[in-house]
Image 1 (tube, one colour):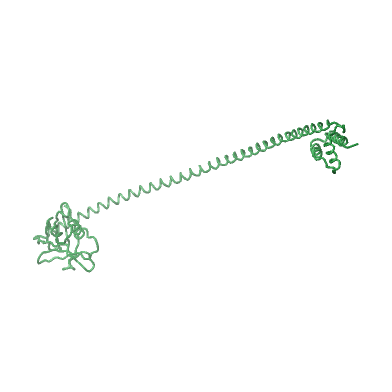
Image 2 (cartoon, helix red, strand yellow; image 1 turned 60 degrees about the vertical axis):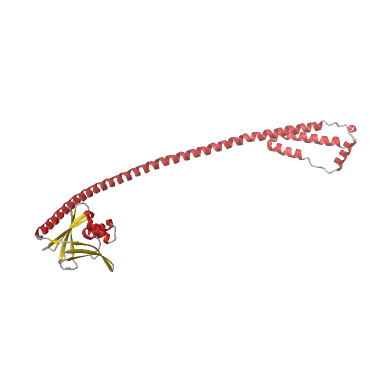
Length: 302
């Protein structure tokens, strides 16, 4: 059987402290036994489940909610001390209690109690129950104290291990950072060497391409010189007899003779290219100019 002893102040006797004990078997809603004493006299009464249901119907409340209000008022003592007001009439032996809500109060219950002939036995049981409760509470407190000490030791041990782990982690990070710097510097040096080698290879390729392009230009110039020589040779094969010239040719020659002298651009350009290529080709240029002068003499009328 579970018991709950609490100290209450009655509205009819506010200067006298009373002790209220509530005991129940299974649940508070299945019924309980209430005992009230002032240290000299004692009163007791039994509240059955039907009485609780009847009180809940009178209050127009659900039974679960009414039982919860009974627990707060008689067992838990929840809320401020002035939330619930208790009253007991020694003449009628009715014990009642109310709940105060601001300016309004309503009755939660009223139970009929009977006076005990030998209150000393009841008071003795109350004192023993209080002492047992105190001893049980002390045992729980000691157990909790030991548990707290164990948890504190475990916490200190875990904190020490954690600090060691943090120190080891920082040491590993420092070592890894140093190794990373070494590897990074090696990679940077390797990248710089490869970049330098790449630049050298690119520069070498440019030089090779430039050397390959220079002979090609010289060969193209030689080919153009050969083509020009062939064209001037064909011009020198024109017959020099003016008697075989047609009238159209004579008229063309007359227009050429009467027009002002036009400098030959091709030989001049050719001479410049030959002078840039090789100074040893000057005799060939002079021979070509002599052939051109002979050609002009052939075309001039005698």
